[in-house]
Length: 153
Image 1 (spheres, rainbow, N blue to C red):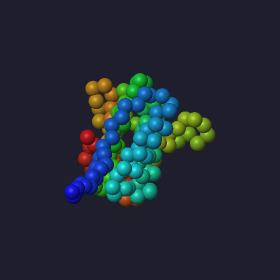
Image 2: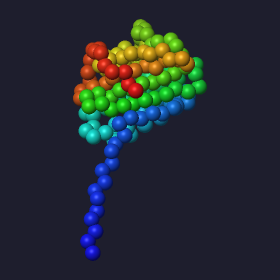
Image 3: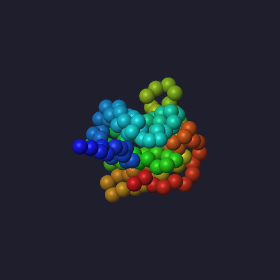
Image 4: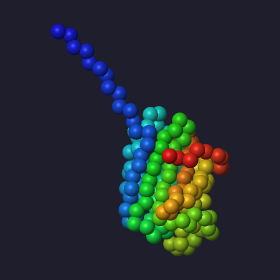
């Protein structure tokens, strides 16, 4: 008797959706989810791009926790041939703004400028219950500057 075995190929997820409680540990959890998502992609983004995606996610989730006043925030990641799309939703309608960084204390002011420098595009979408901040990061290298890009779904 001859038996044939079919080779199974796992299709990596091309998208991730998560709801996070707006607590201090949310950014850490988001970084872990993002790392696992990026490791599952084939081809994988290069190291600089992966680091940029994790940093952008961490900053956006941290901002949602610190500034939104909501109980939850959402994280969506989607892989595209040349980029990773990031979307973080929260309960605030106030868009992120560039501020003068506080180099002496805990006032922050570094995150949004850093996100804009790492992403090829950013956009803020008003939602009925808050906003979604979108960023696109190139899969190869750390891109700089802004260009039109599709809004993540």
